[in-house]
Image (cartoon, rainbow, N blue to C red; front, side, top):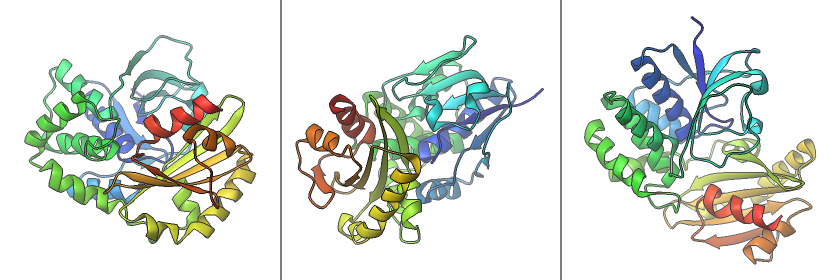
Amino acid sequence: MEKTLIFGHKSPDTDTICSAIVMENLQKKLGKEAKAVRLGNLNKETEYVLNHIGVDAPEMINEIEDGQEVILVDHNEFSQSVKNIENAKIKMVVDHHRICDFQTSEPLYYRAEPVGCTCTILYKLYKENNVEIDKKIAGLMMSAIISDTLLLKSPTKTQEDEKAIEELEKISGLKAQEYGLDMLKAGTDLSDFTANELIALDCKVCSLKDKSAKVAQVNTADIADMMKRKEEIEESIKNDIEKDNLDLFVFAITDIINSNSQVIVLGKSSDIFERGFGKKLEDNTAFLPGVVSRKKQILPVLQENA
């Protein structure tokens, strides 16, 4: 029997990678053939998680064959997925994002909930299917929730996320606060990334009515230190705008300690950002106090003001 491939979005973050591995485990426990894969390189936070818990990274793929059975986690938009996804046989989607640019030729299992993390939904699926959660799987799920909710400080977090972390902390043996802070800090070491790598680390393509845009985000413990690289980051963004014919590129540098973001905004449609946030860009940048979530605090504002 051909294995069903499980993967998250391009430029994978911790939730994407952990969700794929966790879903593979769940499928196998339910007696199904499945294999977790990834669509991009790991970031340092995810490397820290996998090394700490002792789990191998999924194999990386670039495209799939026609008719390949797949399960999508942590995304549903085809623009964020693997090459040739439109010709795949999508069996299942488990996601916590808006539904966009998605259709299938056959019925499927679709589970989308407005929670802070895909792994929170997967935690519920284990419970609903009476499948035991082992120590490593609990550690992966807890790590993903910590990552996506910034240790439950993001406005995306819900009571469901809090409940899941409380239970997963007991199973994994990890102390969420202590481990979570170390994990998040591990992801802020961006010193050896090129500017091109920085803007691609966690980047989402999105449509703003008739405009094409990208919104990228990196986490840091020191915004000022990251802004020292502003000139080279801007150059990379300009090249990306030209290459992909973008109308707007928003690069958010998020301070995980103080819960603020500094953004670098470029593109002929930068007025969408200024109109939405009520801020005049100065030298292509603006400070957004209290803004840490791309999904809940940045993307909706851009979409509403496009």
